[in-house]
Image 1 (cartoon, chains in turn cyan, orange, yellow, red):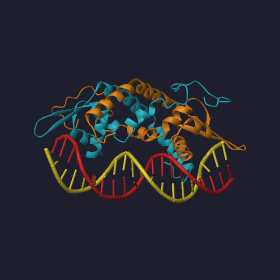
Image 2 (image 1 turned 120 degrees about the horizontal axis):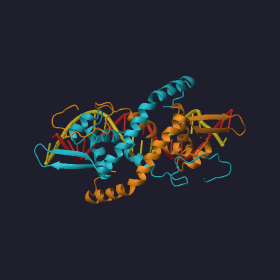
Image 3 (image 1 turned 30 degrees about the horizontal axis):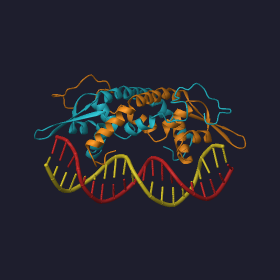
Length: 137
Length: 137
DNA sequence: CAGGATCCGTGCGGATACTG
DNA sequence: CAGTATCCGCACGGATCCTG
């Protein structure tokens, strides 16, 4: 580490490159860490979806946010966008292989969440009870 | 799905509960999806850390944000906080078993990132070249 | 050292209206 | 249907000052 005097450094489960680097986790999080990306990916993991289909599948999302989200995912090569020159227009979104590989992570995320959500909720109740009016969320 | 007429629904890699539920991914993302949580967890995965130690280890974080981040993690039961009544005061942060279990996910996230960051960067360059002045980031 | 309190700017995202 | 354009609130987070 940077200051290696009396650090109680255990086994580096997540050591990245060895130094105090942020690996590249920041980048993934800046992608899928936003409010909607993961939800859209989850829906697209089910198969090909059209714009309105996506919007209806992802409960609270606005047109604007769906557009932005799907554009960014396309820009990153996680989602492909194919326009059919019909009337009315028809645009289909689909996960690319790269995007599909992300669904495994999302799956792991969902599993972890399902497994710990109750414990976390309990921990929160206990903490809130022990720290009244702290303002922490 | 909601409209099951001609959907090209493939195998449900991420099907959650079957319906258009958001599983609980939202909750995890609201936790570790913020700007600093994961970085702090990564650092704590190395071992026990004190406040200033954490702040120095996580490059750009402010005291305020470190405090908030670590408080929230403590509230969720992912991090334990032990105060040693010494002078100067000494506070140690450590991952709880639950918090430690998260490091596996973070590890997977980092691996995925490392594996695809170059491809993503390339995809972005191509997209930006094809869509000049789009304003999408 | 470990934080609490306060002020403040920015940008994410919601709502609405309009277009091809 | 599939977007684009515009306006706007507010919460997230940075900077600074102060305390035990």
